[in-house]
Amino acid sequence: MKQILKIMWGWWHSVLILGIILYLTLTPDPMSGQKIHLFEGADKVVHCFMFIALSAAMVYDMTLKSRQRHIRAGEVLVLALICILIGGMDELAQGYWVTGRSGDLLDFGADIAGSIIGTVGAHLWLKHRQQSGD
Image (cartoon, rainbow, N blue to C red; front, side, top):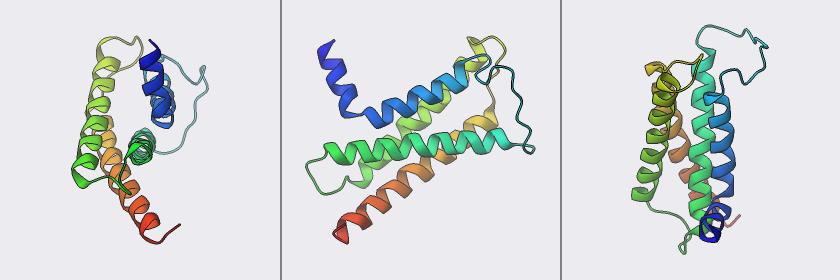
């Protein structure tokens, strides 16, 4: 148990954001009945931003743990695939295990887009920061 907590502490940004995502997506009514009316498809934008945050946090956490100045492109690809897998499992869980929720292929597409944008964007931003000496 101590080892698991130690690993989670090293990835605390990612664990925190993943916890928030799972709460928002797997709770039958996370907003306690409050309805926010934005625009058609706003939930897809929310999914995209949730996964931008998760994947960017994962890149940041891995960069902190890396012995190099920045992580390699292959590692970024693996992190993106992990985020995509999380998004897929989340949609399956919504569809099969959560009352009042349903899995949505378009939500999964938004998760994929957010995962790619977040990992690539965070990697390029951190690489630029490190190269400029900030």
